[in-house]
Image 1 (cartoon, one colour):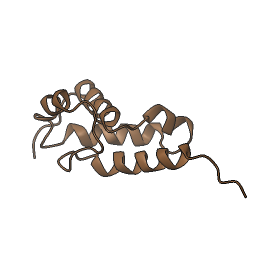
Image 2 (cartoon, rainbow, N blue to C red):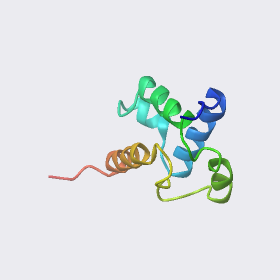
Image 3 (cartoon, rainbow, N blue to C red):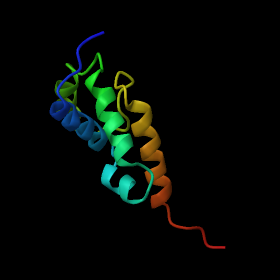
Image 4 (cartoon, rainbow, N blue to C red):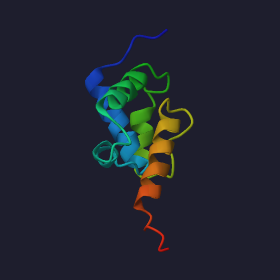
Length: 95
């Protein structure tokens, strides 16, 4: 098991990955789809990620993506948040 990375560094990495993947974390929090505990868990998972050393370089080369790479420990979370965000952004159907 590798040592956990810096909380501050991984806060920014996770935030950058979410932003690159088109996820509005603040909007998700405001709309009740995500919470502070979920965010703390996201950063904690990032701190233990085996791929974290490559992440800053990858993000620099890929500032806007359709989805976080599979190597990201939070990829599934970011994908789910993006789907929920897209669903919430759809105009309501007229009956």
